[in-house]
Length: 499
Image (cartoon, rainbow, N blue to C red; front, top):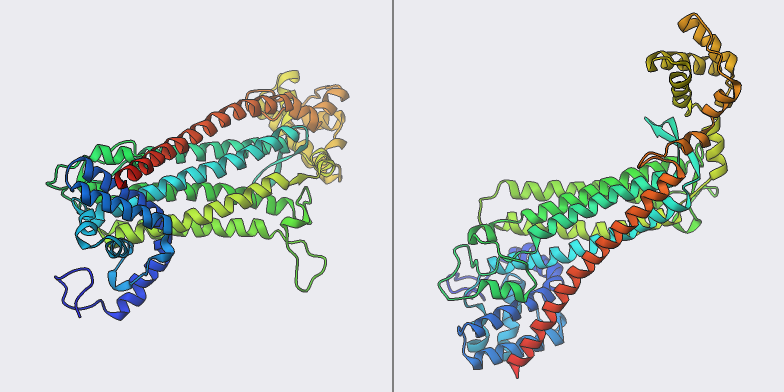
């Protein structure tokens, strides 16, 4: 038996190749790419007709056949691994509907190479839009929480040790800002993704008088990949998207790690509703942070997908290859699916987490997170260098710990004792000044600088961030609208061509 796709090949594809390459690939990809392939085929036929490269009768038959396939959907196409991939199976079904003469003309002036490159870009731009939308949702909930909890004073940590007083709202505002940058990375990738490789053929273009710009515009692409070799050789946009998704995953994993600590019995400063937690099969008292653990684990998964895809590409020649283009892009789709799932879960976490405000306030009052503020008072009111103030306050904290005192137990006398040891003289600060300097609420309120944790500063930053968010939401909606308008125009033109 001969090959079903080539008379150059005198044997059918080995069963092992069908079982382990073509069959799994068809099962995984055909439904996913059917709609994109339909749009690509329709745009190509429309261009061929307008350029006079196919007859009006062939154009009409092709348009009618493609519209019928679109209406009937991928389920009616009998998939045959002997036909290798999605395109040949799609084409075979079209030929079955309209005949070899008309159906076989669809592939004039193109290759699977530029077709597959375009398929990847159509899928990738939808992924960019969906991921951007998911990020906006997370950011919006983070900003809502930032404003609502801008007065919930808590310890800020460095090295997982109490560092300085902040608020839970301030923390969420920082999370929102980091995801705003992630959205920017996805937006940057759009410009390098939404450009057309069509017309590149296998790698050297075509001698047919095609219109590359027209077919690109029909599909909503915003320009061409000019060099036809680069057009089929390159999937760098896929690696860029994978890197962006990996960065997003690193971000959600770090926040999940924070929450994982804060929900622990030892901290108990954040609480999640029971509906986003799990339990134990043996220990009835357990409330397990399963969503947080899932988010952290999936971040590692996404990083692995990036490494796998980049490794698949790095040893390939600069041309169309299976390992570079097929295997290199496979991780993009898996990462995209996982990222969208995880962003929905992360949004749930951000939206439902609640601070234990009373316990947070007690912790930050009793620990020594306001020690820097006391040192600043010594600089301002006692005219010390900061290093001198640092030594004195460090000695005060050590003395308080040795006596079993919390931060709110520090007195003026303790400061004077430390000053005598360090400077040979007392400082004579008023008790009220020492007390205020160690008050975490006063510490937070004094930090009104742009981006600081004072409630009014957080409110200002949230207001500005919400304005930027709405701008980005409008930009995203505009991109979707332009693509939809292009697609609607394509469908109108195809119906007219078929009539």
